[in-house]
Image (cartoon, rainbow, N blue to C red):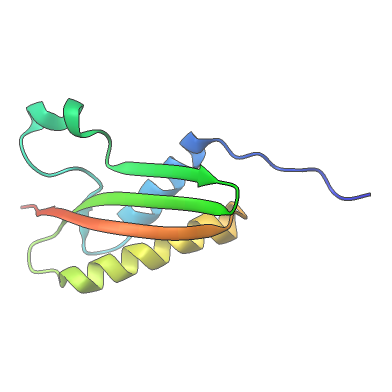
Length: 104
């Protein structure tokens, strides 16, 4: 007899990815860049796709001024992977980080 199965909702994955990305020092906000009135059309800053063989995550972040953008993207990728795989116990297929702006 195997242990109980765990089902994790998409909203939980989105929130864990958002919190993990926000913990990276070079990230000012987990958000889309550009005018606020376009936010409705562009969608949220964290997108999650759950498949049989794993989870795909796409995040949009606003970096802090002076931050190394490749460094920030790599740190966010690592933090999200750790949160999804270790804390939630899910198989991660991919993490795409889009630096969508530099904030003040």
